[in-house]
Length: 625
Image 1 (cartoon, rainbow, N blue to C red):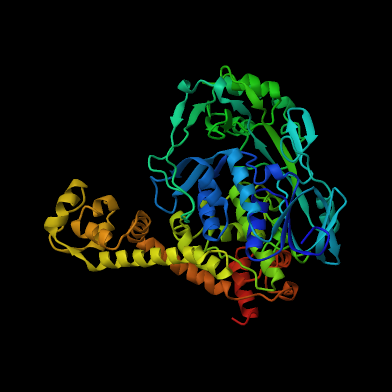
Image 2: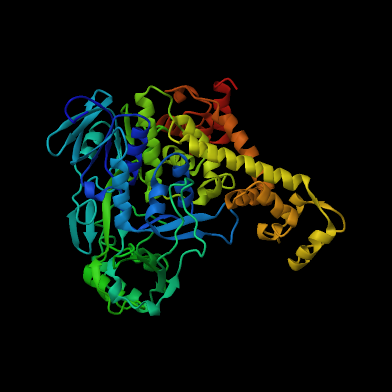
């Protein structure tokens, strides 16, 4: 179908990480989809650091992959380094992270979208939305086109009335070298939406040829790198590029402070709130004045480019201040800049204005995903895009929305936090936000979510079969350890070497394997275990699953019981547009918050700030419980 001869099922506005996943998901579910972006050359551009994953974010990428999204596959195919973070902690904290080749990453996404059936691409700027009453019916573009659609997903990133700040200089833009987007905010505010301003920043990019890496600490990737995707379409890295670490100093801080009086942050020109957990170098110096140095991570932007990303030096200070200060950092004495750091301020919409499907409450068939919802990070944006794409397609097909609960995925935690609590600062995912993080590990995202993706029609039968095999072999291995005993003479030499208490009678393998002093490298030294692994062709993924299950069985069981209690409240639905003002026995604050958020279940109502346990008890009575 061409642009002018009918209606699309889904229009996606914006081609960033959220837009790319949204368009792919909707098209893969059979929806006739159009992705409109201001630049086809910059699809899925890594605007900030050239990396995917990290603490909690790596879990999200694995979840996207299990649900049939492409972020993990494209990260694997364009990675230049892989690291599993937090390996010294428990498996709930293990988080994969990969450096990507920035140019290859965007190119791979473009190629993936071009090969996706049911998906058209179009380069233009959307500067207005088309409504019929409380329904969205399409978009208006800068070229004057009116393009009609049954649903629209807005994934505008930092482009909505974007403003770039470098020192005293301010100019419109959604990203360095690209213009901002106007018109969408104004149309939405006219319809009653509440908007706000947020800011984020990015550090300078410098020329690797001008740096002295001998003065820095090398940060190589893992000796045995893994990959993000559970599919067999990607390969493990054979070679990797190192990152490096260096430090700021008191001299660097003093030079940076000289620019504070003209900083847009300190003069009040930037009104938006920045990300607390990814502060600018100015923020770090101001908030942590007692610290004489801060880490800087020197990250290559690709296999062949000399461009370097100076992670940790995000700034909006004047360019001459950036230059003077960075030259005092060890290894940067002769630095040449490719691009100065800058801050960007942009519009967002309080996410409490959304349903749990990411459809807006005010306008039917309109979905928001990504930084428009007040989040920060590629991973958070991609996850929302995937869910919005799925739900827009399901809406067109007159099917129930696809919603993930807090005990099912970090993506469920992310969306529930946004729509229930809102955000006053750029929202970033952390493992601490998830109550059930022992259940939501990076290693079991495929077991948790592939069955759901397969039921939707996104995951292939091949993927589903692989998950079933993994689950079967894990259960088989665990059962073997539970049933098989080992004699003292076979186990005691290994226990003694590990300073673990010796045994004087035969004991089940499961109990031995669960000891904290032993890992599964030790367990595999028992001939019975290694013979079982070989007989059943058990791979490292299954061994890892089994080890987690054995070591953390108690924690996992406890969290499952807690999740079951939550699910009972999740199953108690609240009627749409329920009138809380008639329930006089709950507090005024609770009535006000419940009316504003309009929770869909008692469980969601209980998580709203200002709603007390006694208020929840009253609601349970009203719901017939």
